[in-house]
Amino acid sequence: MKRYIFLIAFILLAVASQAQFSPFRFALLTDIHVHGRNQALQDLKNSVDELNLTDSVDLVIVSGDVTDAGERLSMELVKAELDRLRMPYFITSGNHETKWSESGCTDFSRVFGADRFEVKHKGVYFIAFNSGPVIKMADGHVAPQDIAWLSQMLREKVDGSVKYVIPITHYPLQTGDVDNWFDVTNVIRHYDVPCVIGGHYHRNLLFNCDGIPNVLCRSNLRNKQPVGGYTLISLSKDSIRFSEKVIGKAAEQWLALPLLDHYDYGEGDPSLLPDYSCNDRYKGVKERWKTALGCGLYSAPALADNRVFIGDDEGWFYCLNACNGKIRWKQKTGSRIASTAAVADNRVVVGSTDGGIYCFATKTGRQLWCRMTDKAVMGCPVIDNGVVYIGGSDGCFRALRLEDGSEVWTFNQVKGYIETRACLYENKIYFGAWDCNFYCLDRRTGALLWSWNNAHPSDKYSPAAVWPVASCGKVFFAAPDRVFTALDAQTGKVVWRTKQHVVRETVGLSEDGLTVFSRCMWDSIVAMDATTDQPVTKWKTNGAYGYDHNPSMLIEKGGVVIFGTKNGLLYGVSAKTGNILWIHKIGNSVLNTICPISATECIVSSSEGTVTRIRTKTAALKEQRLLR
Image 1 (cartoon, helix red, strand yellow):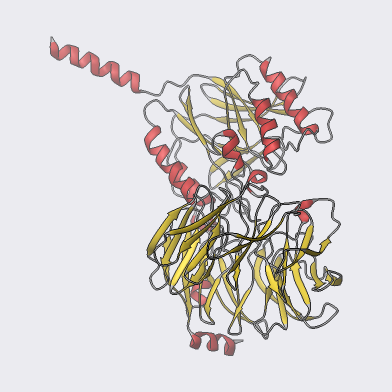
Image 2 (cartoon, one colour; image 1 turned 60 degrees about the vertical axis):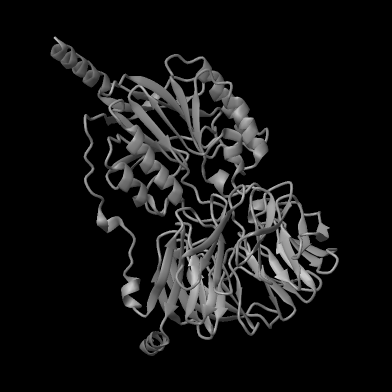
């Protein structure tokens, strides 16, 4: 008898553990783009009102770009509207929340609780994560910690209760949109994924992302129509159907995909993967070591006394051994670090988006002091003569004593947030902010000497991400307006501005101060004469890296200009002639500004979470010159 009872219990357990999929319908809101109390907010109100009157909508998914500028006020307005929904909603972020934000792109999680989610509903497992570039202009990117989370959640949560897995992203998972899309598809292709769902393109589209259907849906905005709308998605026993729902009109189906018992996407297509063949062409370039920290890195490494310093996306600040890349110590701040550290007198200073300016002992990692501010600190410190110069998101640029963090002076008239590293030149300080302004302060007192405005109506064109350089009585920078600019360092008057080379947010200065460099948005590297009062091009070289808008500065060391691209290419270029000396591909994501060691060695970090020491053989460089 006991044997039969056990057998019946086993059968009942087996039946109960099978995926209990039931047909249901949900709504997708995407690309809402609220900017204060604008028309986009009314479009969202209309969608919420209509959804509250709609039967049989079980839940609402929001797939990013809920704001236009990533500011907290707009997020709070969006949340207030979404909170009115009668059904539960689940939300992830888009690139407009991860690129422009005075909080260092941390307010989204603070307002909505997180920028990723996972939920089971009637046999379907929805899982969403950020796919936008963080702070820097670049392709979309899924951070290494999010890929690890995705893998873990799928392993742990996809059990007998789950019939289908539907990932939610903002960007489509394909080349040109997400730089490491293959890291995501390699994970999800082994599950029963009928499709990936997202937005970003503001219209209804179906992509094939390495064999996996990727559906993009309309924006919530009305655009040129009288009203906006959203998407209704229905799952039946045999299909998943997408219908466009214009406010006040009947839903119109535009796509149906089959729901299969099992999806077999096989292995990915290797021909779609990034090309690393340049590493075979330039064999003299070697990775001396590469350390994977497992978390996104959005700042440049700093180097002193055989130690490398860098902060990560989760607020950890690391000290690595420069010889082997091993971690010597690490300290935790309260939030993401996007600030490039500065080192002097056995102390290292860095800003955190928790609002703190931290100072650690370089040898032990002991916190020596922390100066808290009211908002995030993404500005990169500069240390000179015992004083730390750094800007924040609270409208302030500060001078602090390196010894104890006490105030020397504070300039509090900045109208936007600061993420750049300031330039010190002839007792003056130069920096841009996300308010269209470029500032010049007296280094001793912090008094405003002059400011220059590019007169653009949008602050998205501010000279704010570039690290300016100064020489020959001029200060140089490039902004998103694609203009190479030279201002008089004393007066702020324009010396020259040129659109000839279509540069953007990158600049560098030669070691002798006679040449300024920039990387163009399409393929080319350019050198301009720093001594003249007109824009004079010294050389221009086609680097064949394609389209690039990553704000990675160009650094010269020993006659070699080194810079990285948004797709993991590191270039070494002759400062004198512009000849390409070497190219090395480290990954396929953003390379930050390099930290030079010598003409043949440098250290570079990437948004993939790696720190790499590169060595080039002098003989190989000479050989490359001869070949050219």
